[in-house]
Length: 531
Image (cartoon, rainbow, N blue to C red; front, top):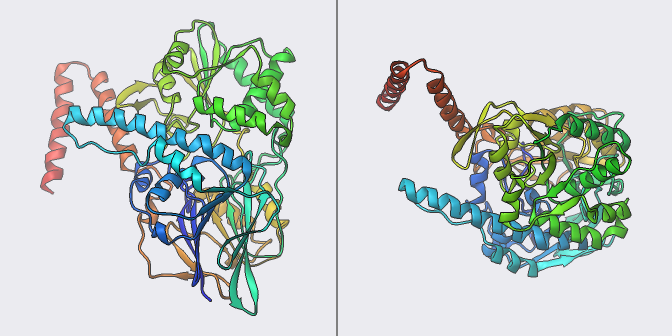
C-alpha cells in the first residue's frame, strides 16, 4: 500500500504548517495553518488549497497558534466534513483564536476596501469571517494526551505534550502500510518547547519510529545558560532602560501564552522591588479571553497559581474596546503595553506602533520570532522608516530584542529531543524553519541520524514513505518557486522604494533638486516600459 506525505506549508518557512498524509484508503491532514510574513506567501491564504477538501477523512491539530490552525474555517468552507482532533485545551483556545482571526480579517478587509474604493481598485473579501470560524468549531473533537484514537481507515493517532503552549502536542501516528503487517510509525513534533519556561512541562514523546517531521525554528541558536531567573534579570534591565517620564514600552506579543508568561515575570519583578510599580496594559481582547482559559487550566500549568495572581494584580489592566485602546496613547507617564500580533502583522500593536515609532521616548521590545517579510522583522532589522496602513512612519523609537520568551526549543534542545526519539529508522524531515536554521540543524544531526536521511522538503514537495526510505515524487505542481519562500519579496522592496523616494525628496536642497529626482525616476520608468 502506498503512503505519501505532501508538504503544503512551513517548508523552508515558519508559517502555514500543513501536511497531508495519503494512502489508498484515506487522507489525513496534520495542521492547516495560515501563512504570515511576505505578501507572496500571505497570498496563498486566498488561493485554493492544493488538495480537495471534501476528500479529506480527518484532520489532526498540533496546537492552536494561527500559523498551525488559522485556515481551518476556510477548510470547512471548502467542503471538509471530517473531524478535527485536538487536545481539550487546544479546543478551548481554538474556540477564541479562530473567531478572533476571522474578526481581524473582517476589520482589515473593510479598511483595505475603503482605500481601494478611493483609489479605484477592486474590493476584496476576507478569507473567512468570525461567523465562519464559529461554525467550524462544531467539527472539533477533544482527545486526551496518551490515548490512541482511530482518526481514519488505517490511521491511529496519539498525542504527547510538546511543552510549547497550553494544549500543544506532538502527534504520533501509526498507519497501516500493508508491508509485513507492520504499520508505518510517524511523529509530527509540532512546535517543541524549550527547557526553561514558566508554565509548560518539558516535552515528551515516543521512540522507535520510522519517520519524524521535526520543527527547526531555532535550529541555528544556542541559548546556553538561560534560566528563568536570568531571563527575569534581562527583562528587568530592558524595562529600566526603556523608562522615560512620558514614554512607553511596547511589547508586540502573541496573545496566548507569551503575554501570560511575560505578565508573571513583570509582576514578580515589581513585587521583589526590582522594578517600580508600572501600569501594564494588555491591549488585546484575545489575550483577555485567553487568560480566562489559562485560569480554567491553571492546575495543568507550572506556576499556575502565580499566573492567576498576576492576572488579578491591580497594576494589570485589560482593554476591550477600540476607544479604550486609543486612550492608552494619551497617557503621560511611563507605562507598558502588550498587544498582538507578535509579528506586528495585524491587531492593535500596529495602531500603537503608528502612534509611537516616530517618538524617541518609545521603546519596542521584541520577545518572539519575527518571520521574514513581517513588519516586526523589518523593524528588528533596523529600518529607519516603515509603512503602516498606507502611511510612512519614521522610526525614532529604540528597537530591542529579548528572544528568551520563545516557545520554541533551540538547536541543542531540538537535537536532545530527537535523540530521545531514537531509533528513527527511515528519515527525519526538517520543517518550520528558514534557510539558516534548517541547514544548521541538519548539520548538527549528522551524528544522530545518517546525513542522507535528514531531509529538507520544499513547499508542495511529495515523498513516498512506504519503502525503506523516503523517495521524492517529482510529478507535482508548485504554488510558489522555492527561491521565493521564506524571504522578503517584491512588496517589501516596493514599500522600501517608496520610503527611499520620500527620504531623497526630503533631503533635496530645493525645488529644482526635487524636480531632478522626479525626472530621473520618470525616465527610468519609461526605459523599463520600453524594454
